[in-house]
Image (tube, rainbow, N blue to C red; front, side, top):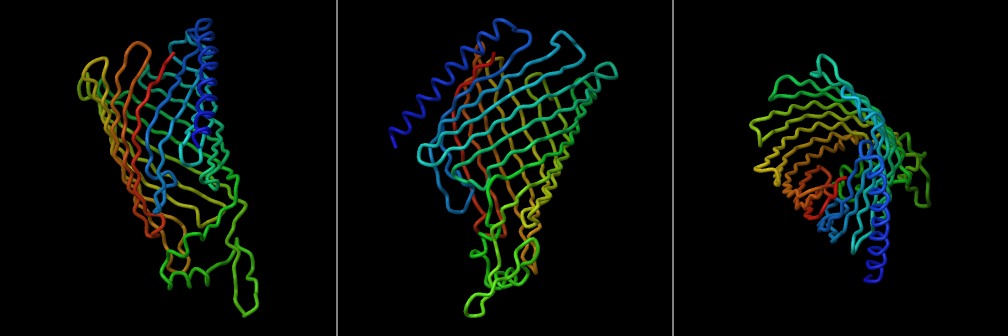
Length: 343
């Protein structure tokens, strides 16, 4: 295990040193067009798999982003493309990573008080610990910000996402945690898109539970308001509604969420950001009385110190998910500290 960690760490340090050299060269040659970040952090996640049976691990996380503006001298619009990646290396569990690339366009109207925009991206996620979560996808959307006053900005955003999951899933994997009455109802209600019942010796009916064709359409609508309370303090409140249409209807859901955060900058070098949110998930798994509703609550705190082009930060995030299915009820705490270089 120690050799594995050392080899991975050496490979990623080498990779980021090369990336750093390339980014520095590009920045010197085209400072107006390029900007980006490179970050590294270390921490502990006490429930990596988000399950009632907690499995925790220390980790090192690497992330980078490169943004290229096509017309940097245009003061009334922004047109750009970007690429970003994140790799989380767990010491005692399997790793995961995410890649994303896309583009965006924003422009000003009404003397700069209205700022509409469009955006899109392609993404890929890989997770060796939870392979059923691995997926590829694309997103397209539009947004509109309204600078209502010097202290208030309002915004609305609509996006559509398609996700193609790479691996099959046992959609009834939680059945053993259900009461016996619900288990019987679950077996009795199995129907399309499942296979017909198969008769085994002993006259026992068994239904196919593993679904291989898993894809999902997501529609997300969000509104937000940013209130500049004073020069060093601003608050943001937002609400979202997400509708998931899964090919496997048991995995579809509707989500309602509310978020509130503050950003306090007591001076130019420090930034303190608390966050609180709540989400309500209503799943479509309701065959003959089996229904799943989840309530997720979370709080977080991030403290950053800035000097020159660097940011040093420490953060803690706590999540509590309460589900009507016992195996989906969990708590999670993630703490980490790290450094980010912006160029």
